[in-house]
Image (cartoon, rainbow, N blue to C red; front, top):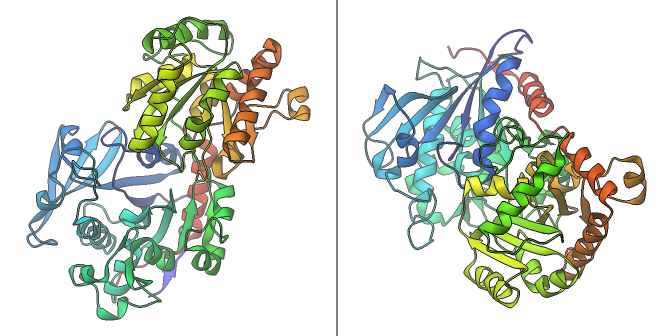
Length: 495
């Protein structure tokens, strides 16, 4: 099939495909990116619709929907494709109750285990995207399909194996976290609706199993990750999580585009979750928020630095290093508050630390969006000691709010935080503290350095201001996505 290049001035139609989207449904940073990118691309003449599974949380947020088409037998039951809007977001929703009508976490059941039919649920989503890409839904015929993570990674595979004689839109696959690959036992193969030849090393077969993300990497026209450093890390044996060889093979198609944040939602000058709003001209007002954090976590008011963590409580996030080093962190002169949920053993270890230091450490198990804003607006620094971090968003929120990031030198953390080395501090360019030794001792040394910097009020203030003035929005990153989209060949209509 011949293709043509899209003129730079023409509107480009993009179908984003994702399993979650803020503010409708969120379990992590993927939802934030999917939720804000359409608005960031709109000024660049990119028209984005987002295809989502019809989870109850999605329908609960929609005021009006209209049916576009029906698929009576869709991976085990009837499905309807619906068009909807949420604010400025234009959506397509795959309404398949037998697959998605389940409350709570979209991926896990009430016991915390993966839904046993996740392979079918996200194959159904990807196949629906392919049919839209072929032009079967006249209401929106995209030029390009942008698939996010393993849940949408079969989109390029369905286009490849089932698309003979049909229009073939360009495809982009974004890897938000390579640790989650969508790997399933081979006995699910017959449920996917793909030809037998697709179960091969040059297709979906992956060490005898079915690999969704592996297939997406193989067939996508372009592969992006959410930071340039992470794009390099995943092509190494240490960082590739078993897919490094394939990513090196596709190296010419791989690039890193750092995430941004929604600077309207995350704006300390207007944030209603704060006890006191503020800006670069009145940093002293942050003290009101600090006192609100202390009160909310039952900590006494104290002039010492207050560090926070807002995170999934997992080893990937380095939470075990914090738990192991809490006594020494407290001895260094710092206090710690934690908001998050995750591994039960790590939750217990953090609670134990809080019991040992009830006036210096506090832990809140769970997640609260408003409280996460208050922590950024009231704490002095945020700890992000991840062993690997594709991009990270909490350090960007910290920069925006003058909550100085203390981060491991990996992935997007390395790309977005300027370390407070002597040269950067003297130049007024430093925005945080980085550390390369990702261990309890390495973290402790970074905390000690942070405490020393905090005890130099003018140095600390310059770091806060440099962070608050940093470009953490989507404008430059959206321009990179738009340029990538327009470099890809776009389809002619099928004969």
